[in-house]
Image (cartoon, rainbow, N blue to C red):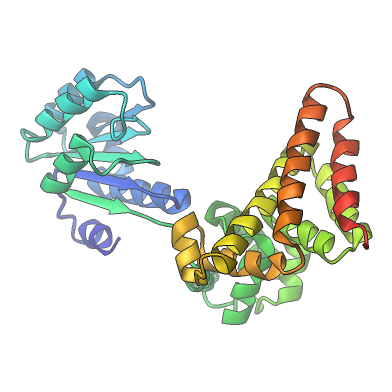
Length: 329
């Protein structure tokens, strides 16, 4: 990302960029910042064209790049979520790859995508001609530092870490919650009590806490979290899917730890998770035997099927799963 920062600051642009990766918030943020630097908002109507989705017309993209800028140094062609960097659009990918070889000096192509195959011919063409920026998920330290900067230092390091652990690690969600927190706290230093009062926990954090309560055989607490999620508008079937995912992550992490002797970092790389998420799963998993997690996953799948076939009411079906695995046996 340092290269992007440098190009934005110096306004010395390459002919093509690809911005992609797991951290969608930063992908969108850097795409927006780069585009604004290439073509200021007041010039965008005449000098910027946007193509979006898997049905976007490649011929028009190429044509747009051949148009001269109007009272601006550059013309910008922004292409979002095109699918050109994966299988399925081979002819279009080849055509775009060839066109990039002849981009005018006063044109910049910016591609933004979620999933990219680095063997793809267009990926290789952009990398050769310009710059490919992959933005992976941020770890605890990076997220905490970002929150400290976003609050102008009003969050301490420990409070920032607390916020990530208790509110969630999704940057889009954190950005919204930080804005709420700043409005609530005013000019004073932000405390963990402020975070608890002003911020809404992400569904993932609620599920983590619910499964922790299940593991601790605290059915009352687990049901309290579940009912609060229902009150906040979460669907039972969606909650069930998140519970199953948490069971699955604990099973995968536990298996790799006990059977393969992997450390947290290796597990994180294997499962494409943040390392602190792996550490949390390993800690939480100590309350569950591996065969219990396997059985729980089967019960979640059966409950999902029963709900969808009308054999059990959605809210009741999930409650039964919670109660079954919260039993003190």
